Image (tube, rainbow, N blue to C red; front, side, top):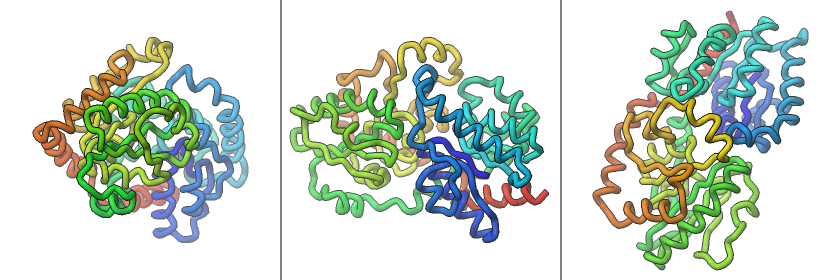
Length: 373
């Protein structure tokens, strides 16, 4: 059983599913995910990727659907036909509860892309020691942390390393998106969750207007995640610069852009590995920030900065985030070759830290070995 709860997890689950089928063609795969996992041969008992939520208080509205999904999967784990192993992918609020149910049912639990206990909620390590059979770590600094906590762990590398193998070149991306010419290209990646996009898109649009005021020939391209409606991206578009909305082509947008405005998440790591300079931004509700802000244990919000251990990309969040500050940071990059080069130099250090290609195959071998035992 494979369980993912949002768009990025669906993509990583699909890659794992393909690797599992390649190594063990007769394996039955089923669980929770989205269209990518379904296309990779996973029988979906539940599809809730379009319902993924963000933050703490913001997630309340999605609880009924997730609880129904949890009950369906828990019942399957407790049935006579239960799986040999449960692979949970990210989505810790849901997946740690499901892992507990799996262990009670005698099913081995593998956690692929584990909770970011190094950033916040370190007490989750105690629960993971009780209910997780094996953690498949994706960052190089994770294995020592889990070993110290007594949680079995294997480093397989980050799945974005495999995913980016099919990313287009810069020239191919610009041709595909119709962006030939010397005009600067600004890519907007507002996120993959509906509420997240609703919160970030107006700020990004206003920042684009300010950038266009200084660079009237600039081109603006929005990467539309498969979980986000186009109408959400087009809200408030009147009166600003023209935007090209590109569905399901985030890597092409990342490659084609000179600078990216990115909502914090996996996209920051992907953009860094592709070598595209960026400004990272994020905003939670005031209540969520008040409740959970004090629990955060790292000084950065972007995976690029966290992995490198220093501030390579500018970050704007909560009170520091405004259209003016976002535009200002983007213009500072656009108008400074030295600033662009400094980011790219930092990004060059990432490739060797996140593992070699073949992440999906390494993870699949670990899963099959544990399932067989």
